[in-house]
Image (cartoon, rainbow, N blue to C red; front, side, top):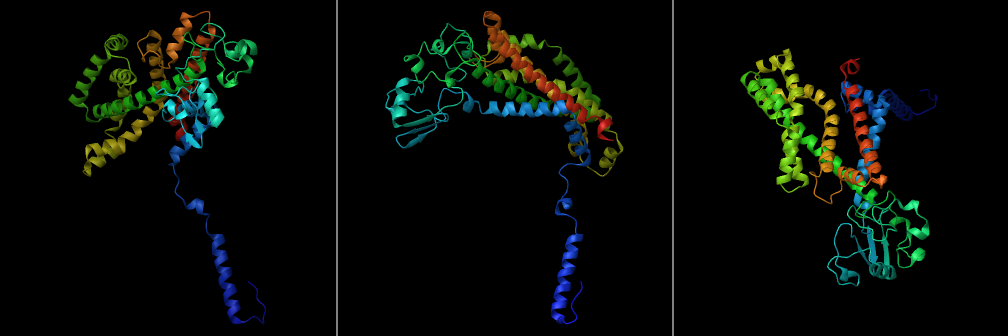
Length: 400
């Protein structure tokens, strides 16, 4: 740095020190490059391969958006307001049951669709309703034709409001009370049942797939790593267990036990874990005699440590590519049982039950078409995601 000949020595030294500091700051690498990568180079390539699969990438985002929306189904389709302001107090009926005496009535549970309750709240406050003012079990008593009723947008305004007390001037004859996809044979809103049914199907499939993966991976790891008599005995047991006709057993048990989400999940879990055993067993059989495994044994590393730390990550590659298709099969099985009447309890939101109604009410095509479109969309998205995961973990693309 150049200085004036008349500059005092102290100023010259301070200026040189600042110049040295700025030069070091410029030479230092950016802070971001010093951070360790969150993913290993191999997993980074896999992630890039997954994103390069455009159909699978967009299917993942569409599926996540639909799943997140249905997780909050109570905020989208409900026969209760989200929030009520009444006489200076705030209430959240979506989370808690309030007695009707809070709003000037006398019943133990408030019916917020009651005109008296709505007028009382409107005179002393306000209500915030969900976009769809029906839950999956809500019955619309104001449909203009006998159930199953066509979508509301197929009627004129006078026809839609004919059953309301004040006709077209009734405050409840609003777009929030429309049945966008019509009603089923019990006058329940089809769109609300589709939203709740989508959530039930995906949650059922996710829980069943996760639990099956844990059991199947553990069983396959034990078989493949120890081999010998352990593998032989396990294989004979799996062959016998797999030869049991699962569908007939499901029908028998479902007919004996009271239907329920967790009972059905437990019955299906008894057989679904077998699908993972073969894949994991093959990976452990292949890798148990690799040099790094023998080196770990020579150093005194325990069997369970070798299995969990060294062999399991390699085996999970094949398992992860298998998961979306197992999830697909779980959802299909639940839908099939509901269609046959051996699935979830009567009245539960179910895609299979809606398809069964479409079969029984051919004069109401919106029932079968709605259930078919939602089910087809869900399964197609999962298949596309599975294809992208399979390509992402393809060794020919991951190790380039």
